[in-house]
Amino acid sequence: MSVTNNDSRTLTVKKVRVDDGSFWSSDYTQERLERDGINTTIYSGNRWGVALSHRIGWDMDELKVIVTVETESGVTKELVYYV
Image (cartoon, rainbow, N blue to C red; front, side, top):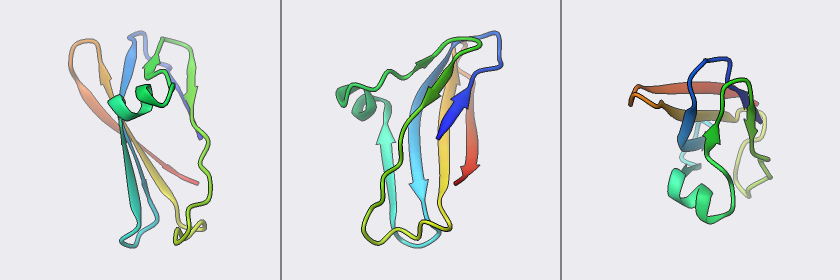
């Protein structure tokens, strides 16, 4: 799953939520991503991505990924992807 920053501003990934429509979901904060070695900065014109692996119990046909990003001026946006 990848995000392309078509904005002229740098974006920071604040949270990634993986949801399958049931009670199984996972949240990954900026701090957790960085602790796991994942850069959370998306410069203008660049891509950012993570691999989603199968988790026991997830309905892989109904996955929704919500990536919360923040601009340099503090504006927050949610980007929704269905995978």
